[in-house]
Each structure stands twice: as structure tokens, then as C-alpha cells.
Length: 319
Image (cartoon, rainbow, N blue to C red; front, side, top):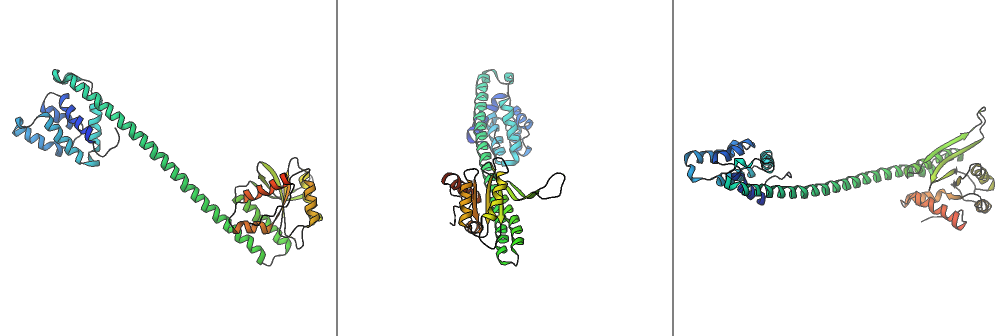
């Protein structure tokens, strides 16, 4: 039966009608309750009345008195209440009943079984709903914690990024720091990252090429170039990136710069779209994205789609 603190009214009345019919004598009713673990304090008055004036009380009076007292115990009487229900619903030896009470007793036991099963089924459904609600609430709390953690990470990255504009770094130092900041930013948004690395021949220390970063976006590998230049990005600055992209099967490219892009560089990138997807991004766009708390993944996908669909390699997104 369900873990109720007390018997519902209908179950209490059924038990009062049933238990006295399962045994023959008044003392047997008390023994039934005693065997179920009912506290002696709840049996004392019935015993006393039975000893002093047995004719003044019947089996049903004893059952109602004991069950009512047991019900008032709330959780302290829970074990005994469960045991009584168990004994009644599992009762099979009706030879202990008076012969004229056997059919009535069998019917009452069957009724209690049905009532208990129905209440248990309802309770199980309620417990399942409660469990489901708790799981949803737990997921919601976890999502909130993860969102707060992500927001803190992004705020920290934003502070580091903004610091690059005010501190006394030369362009090369800023470029190196920019790589670290942007790779951390990609990671904070759940974008798979491989940070900067160099490629060398197996038998030589000669650097063949250096890659600032690699990310996976919409299931595609993108080589990322990050530059902090004094002047606008020209063809000479942009060309090596295209070579690295073309040197890898099915790779795409992203070029991020603190400075603007010259028209010849934009034109070269547009022509390159006939071969591979590559798009341009300014650091200003990323700064504004962080200030408005935008989504980096959506931002990059929008720029990629503009390059693929509209042949527009530098869609400037400032809001």
C-alpha cells in the first residue's frame, strides 16, 4: 500500500468491517492487532473493557477503537498500519472465520485488495509524475548552472580581449595573445578546437607551416587564421591562408583580423569561394557580439551561409 501517514476513511471503514470477521472471538481481534505490531497503549483500553465488562463491547467496537487510535499516531504507527494491510490482503485461511461469516469475509478481503491496488497504482503514477517533475527541475537547475558558468567564462574572455587594446603589446605579441583568447572563446561556446600548431617534416625541424587554430563548425573543419596587423589586411597577408586551406581536402577557412580588409583581399576571397568556403571576420564584430551577449555559433554560421549562398565572404555583422 502507499506510504500514507494514515488510513483513508474508506479503507478504515473496510478494515473495521473485515478484521472482526476474520477471527471468531474478541480476544482474537486483539491478538490480530498485537501480531501486527500495534503498540500496547492502543490496545490497553480494549483489553481493560473486555476484562471488566466483555458484554459491553463487541469485535467491531474493538477494531474501530484500535484502528482509530493507530491512525492518530501518524508516522509512528506507519509500520503497524502497513502490517495490518499486508495481513488482511494476504489472508487466505478463512477456516478461522465463523462459517456464516466466511463469504462476507472473503468479499471484504477482495474489496480491500482492489482498493489498495487502486490506491497503490494512483500513488505509483503520482510518484512517477513527482519523479519526472524533479528530473525536469534538476535539469533546469543544471542548465542554469551551466549557463552561469558559460557566462562567467565568456565575461573573463571578454575582459582579456578588451585588455589587448589597452596594454602596451606590439602587434606580434597581441597576435599571439589573440590566438589564445579566441581559441578559449570558441571552446566556451562548445566549438571543438585544436589550438595553434606547426607542421614539420618527419626528419627535420624546419617549420613548413603554422596554423593558428582549427575548429569544427556545422560538421566541417575550418582552419582559422588570426592576425593583429597595423594596416588593413591585403592580398599578401591573406594569400598564405588560402594556400593552407587548399592544401587540405574538404577544409574551409576563417580569417579574423583586428584591422579592416582591403578590397583586393575581399575580392580574392570571393573568387576563392569557387573552390572552398572561406569567410572574413573583423575583431570589431566579435567585440560587439560579446557586448550584446550574442551567440558565437549563430554568428559564424550566418557568415558562412552568406559566403556559400550569396558569394559574400565578408558579411559585416555589427548588431
